[in-house]
Length: 251
Image 1 (tube, rainbow, N blue to C red):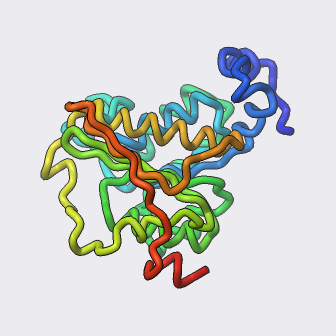
Image 2: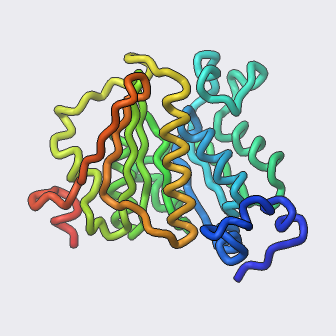
């Protein structure tokens, strides 16, 4: 078990008293290594909450610059950060807030080519992108690597999230998006976004990540959909699609 320092015992005192965490669980979090793909509206709160919880290794991959239009929902950034790389700024914020973490911020776009290096020594991947193609690439590369991942998406006033196990026994993202050509590809820039909605989705992704790293049960293959404005929400069981081009052809 990874030994906790006196400073860590003091820092995580309120978390350690939870039966879902305790000393053993906190040590598991300290050993955990996650990759967060995207440092925008989803990625910033995910990174901050996982760092705050004591996840020992956090790798961030994003090649975008901070723009003024990002600030209403990407609250880790300030006006002085505009023009800088998101990954660099977010990495510094995390390191400043918790010097005991191993923060690995990379100014790079996640794709099929960069995936092998970015996935090295990672336990769990979190999707914080605004791209269908990126999610398809995440699904395929993590499946090849045998890694679980947690997807998240938000646009206008609605959001959705789901977790996929490493073997995709409960289906994969390709099962969900059977015909990618028919899926709406417009994102926040075209359709708009209410800032707190990305926060809601990111919090759910963060909880799923902590549950996985702590060894708790995770609802694999369950898509959760929420409209924050109306309050309506529903769950969809994904399940493995028999003719899936990915998981059913590679088992």
